[in-house]
Image 1: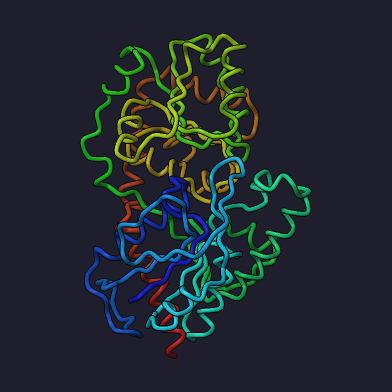
Image 2 (image 1 turned 60 degrees about the vertical axis):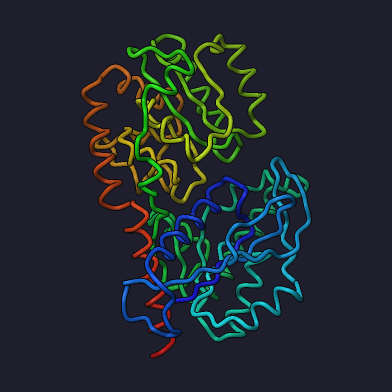
Length: 398
């Protein structure tokens, strides 16, 4: 198959959507040479992927199948070029392309271009509903939050209902989509899988030595952006008594506009020697952070999957998470971790239970790793995606 992916967010941004696209692109292209149009008979592969994304100043693509729409260079809490979905250059390129599937990652901007080209070429449009958009209105603070939330949800619902299939990273989001008005019958849960080679040779000692953490100290890990939609202030408040009164350290592998406020919170509460702000960690090094940790902590309520959770599971970490979409589909409560309500004391108690019980940590961690290897590797998830594509083509051809 020849697949065109349209996205408003792509490399070099290191965030979830870009990582998801790259994971699927690599796995699809590994499956073999491109097949002929309309051949939807097998998951043996044969896939060619073309990426259409906003121009990112100063970044040079190494892949010749990445095409860049013009963009306005803006920075709203982090650098995010805003795509202009009209380009004569892109028009000429796309007009010549013989495509089987168009896959939109967003309902607006380049999502609009994706819908237009799918209709023009009379081929299926697949749409991935990546996140709970109403949790991201803090990035458009110049608009009233309630208005912005209603607008983007209405836009996404309309887009989903116009698509031929909708991908959700986990099934926990489907009831919410239905409540918002998505009537699309073809909704399929397909998570972004863990790229196993990225986690080969992880070394527990490297990061512990770097931050002078002893073997008898339990390490908590967060690999989230330090932003409002990730619920990071709740996390720091919940962990404060755990860190203050126990031999526990906290690795914060991520950055964002809340970093200064969170650092001040640690300083004001006597936690400066317990919390290590590591900044954005490269893909090459992140495996060592997972290996150094004992417990993964997750408080975001905006996720539809949370790729960091599947990565931490793959690396054998038990998880303590706020019960919400994404986490509810991934964490086996009392089996691979704890799912708690949005209560700081309850969250802290769950973390402490794992801190104080090595055998329970080990048992939960082994279950986490088993679930990830059976359900959430990149190869397994990409084959699920191929079956969605094939289903769309089969419906089109019949």
